[in-house]
Length: 323
Image (cartoon, rainbow, N blue to C red; front, top):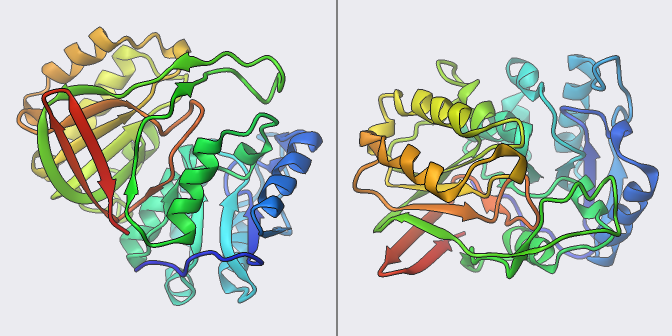
């Protein structure tokens, strides 16, 4: 189920289903609002978007209320999460999936929001979007790549080619908006091959929280995409990936995309190659690393549940998403 495309003048509601928007600086909020308004959208905020407790989140009841109200309100055409965090999986059994299915609309965010993405897709079949948070639009030096990819995913139905950006950055932009360091960018083909399947994935450690629950979609026949943040490192990534590979339908995935790692993880291309080469379960499928999604900048917007094709042969790569 594909939500209606966003159009100029549409209302986008900002909610905080994980960490409160209270952690986002006021100037970054102003920049994010102006950026979205410059794209033609009207920005509104959930009732409890700034509320927080000692964990800088708020009650399950209030977070669920903002989600339900955003889907229920017919004026709202798109929903952006304020930021990620740690606890969106607390909400899954309290969501009204019938309400969500009856009011399909664009829902976008990444990281901890993986739990909501996959639960909504599993329970309703609604395509959601693994892409920028509201706070992502608060960068003073906004990336054309991030904006263009977002617009391609949520405003039109043409196929999307997920090409590498020219450069990438791992700076904590929210601490220093002026001093940014950029590096040349390219994707890395770890295993050649061709594949077609629906895109399922997100943040690896969050995805693993759904194992054994009713909220994890089947991975059979999918192109899996995974990424993780600065808290991971080669040993923990290896362990988390292996845990996923133990699932019975993982031996039927058709391709694997791995988002670019942050520098603090100390993940190197050689370490990643060794990890992948050790996984017999991944033999014979195309595997691409350093793809533009996850916790570095810029990022692509990936429609969960959409059909995608991978062609990786002789050093040439094409990632195409049908909408």
